[in-house]
Image 1 (cartoon, rainbow, N blue to C red):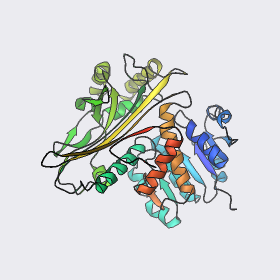
Image 2: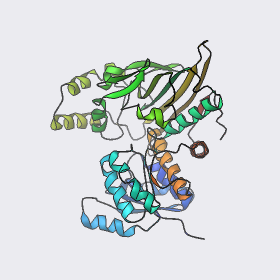
Image 3: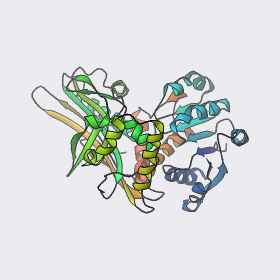
Image 4: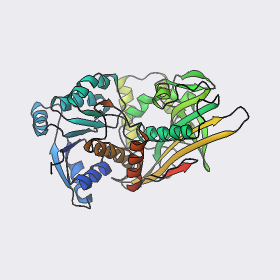
Length: 390
């Protein structure tokens, strides 16, 4: 038998543990590269099927360390980049130069897209947007659109509404309503970005996140939500580009009720445009005051819904919900992000994904494989008016 390609997981931060262990158990071995190997060493005892986790040091700012990493790569290997988003392009170029595939949970960028022709020519997959959000939200959306097609409610002069909201927060609500599992700087920067969506049948832009907060009932709870980034490209991505009756389309962030009030002083600081030093000081303070305790539970909620309303008022609606908690190395955020990354790696190993720079799969058969894998890994998915038989 031809041996499996080697797996090189880069970055053993708080969102990596479950995926590393799952792949070690599945394939028998994985190499984890990190600047602080101690973070990865703690995972070795969690492999319950004897999977081998090899720990090696990597510092991208040191030429010798980078050369050592490059020498460990062989054609056909898979590089899993859990580095900060700005470094994925560098890692993708390195992977391509060594004939390796790459997987990352981060959003697809123009820099990454520019590598598509080279990846196709070399028969390599560079897989993006395969975490929680983006990632599982894409899988849910494709399932719902497929269900709507099967029900023959699309392209039927109906009013169509789509919403996808995701958030991570403490399982037990605190006055601040939120805690950080990694540097708050990324959250703070994201809050100041404009967001675009379809609302009431027309394009709308919200300049800053806190200006677009609305209440969102889910089950017996009331959350707060706000639009996230630019939703418009995902209309076509999800197969809804031909819907003339598209009334609402939004991808957003979910927060616990009271979030806007609890964060009002932070919004005031962000609104006046702090310089880099002030922003770093704010980020450092928030991390000190609002980070998770060692055994504190976090919670992730993802809700994706699609509805089509006929002129006579008859409503077709389907939804998928993920609501999970965790703690420690198996936090809810770590499980939902890294276990989805592991599904992508398995798909590359199984040669089920095309060559090129790609995102989460659209093919429903492949989507079902991934969701079945996530369910087997312990993530519970609730379905409304959709066949989730996987």
